[in-house]
Image 1 (cartoon, rainbow, N blue to C red):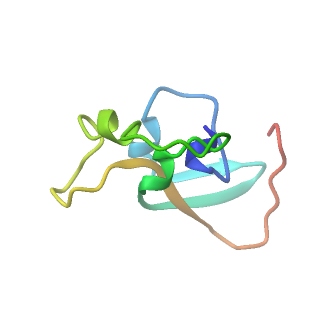
Image 2: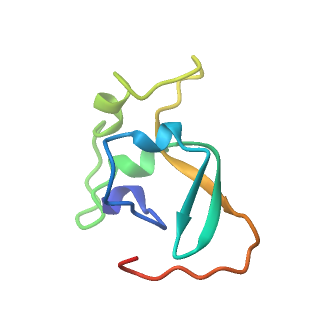
Image 3: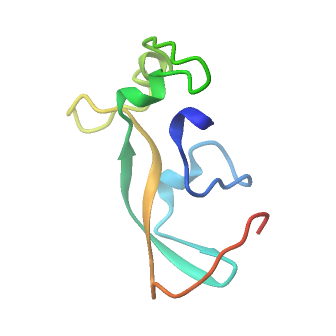
Length: 91
């Protein structure tokens, strides 16, 4: 997970379910899903050793490439509805 540098990790639901979300509520704060997140080569660098490879993008490209732009998408970009809510670790 460290290769993807997430801000929020959702541990419930089915794999890739976030692709269908329009909004998500966490601790009473509403977030709007605005677009998929294209992944860069940074995810191919082991964060502890600095070693680089083609993975995980090479494998993910088999089932996470959309739109023909060559990007590999994993996760979602979201925007807080009112910009004032707080979420907590473990929520």
